[in-house]
Length: 127
Ligand SMILES: [Zn+2]
Ligand SMILES: [Zn+2]
Image 1 (spheres, rainbow, N blue to C red):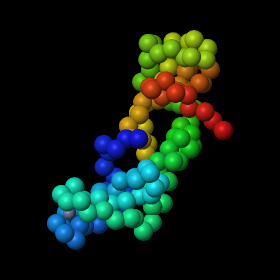
Image 2: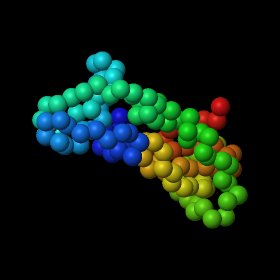
Image 3: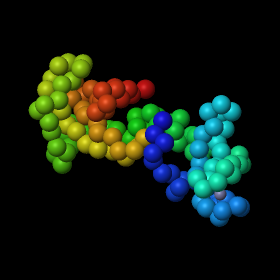
Image 4: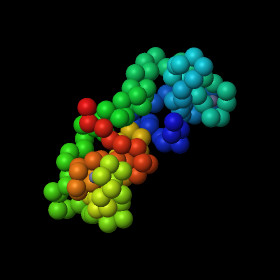
């Protein structure tokens, strides 16, 4: 999905036995497995436990949902008069940035109907 982001903090560091380079986690899509690869040679090993890395990707939307509260009354957050709520058409929205497992995202909440959405246009559903 976003292969450009480094996530070494969440995974155990491994080193290549050939060149001593740091191995990078990578998803082998064909086998649906997490592997570690060396960028200097062709060394590649299967990860012993792939749950940390893969779960963080799979659960992204759940985490976002639980983090976002009703922020309409928060006076510290900036407001935009240039947003457009796709639910009620209202133009004023509170916005804020949030770091999720997807990286940094901008979120909006309509001050009129409390509808929430991301700057990518996708809705943030509560379930
Ligand atoms: Zn190597
Ligand atoms: Zn609205």
